[in-house]
Length: 233
Picture 1 (cartoon, rainbow, N blue to C red):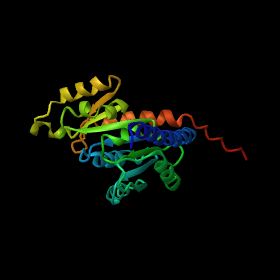
Picture 2 (cartoon, rainbow, N blue to C red):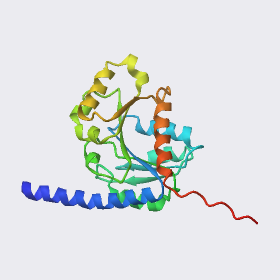
Picture 3 (cartoon, rainbow, N blue to C red):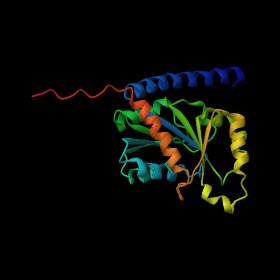
């Protein structure tokens, strides 16, 4: 395949995806939903972090989860064990979720208006960067068991993320990981990104992450019309 044809094919694929993403985004706005696209490498602790977040917030927020993996329903089963509704999307040989998959998943999941929808993308720091799902924000999770240079190696993903969670910070005393350098590398590729240090195991930083999430949910649901008062008898 020629380079020109390859570029045209990629443009066609992204253009079609962007159309579905715009439709998703419009629906999310109408329904006052706050939608996040969680992205990371495999093994970053993304699912554990998500489960801890759901357990802490399920009594105060309407929550729903779309789980993306190439195979198995293991992560969706873990999510449902928290009591939060979840749907699994298996991509087969695909390395990312796309907006069409998410739209169909939302139709099946039927999240409540004003809810928070958390999309756990396939573990991959390359392909998901270019595919808008209609989300409000991409949230990148980088664990301290990875390299400080990950943001420089995968700049498109970190440039597309509005929030970066540096996860597993409870392990820092046992690792040769320069967290200051990691944060500096994030800001080299994305000066506007907010960076939070968190640990799902110890709870460090989790309150700041959940406050950020609750603030976004409040702003999104503010677009919904107020419930009409009951008529007087």
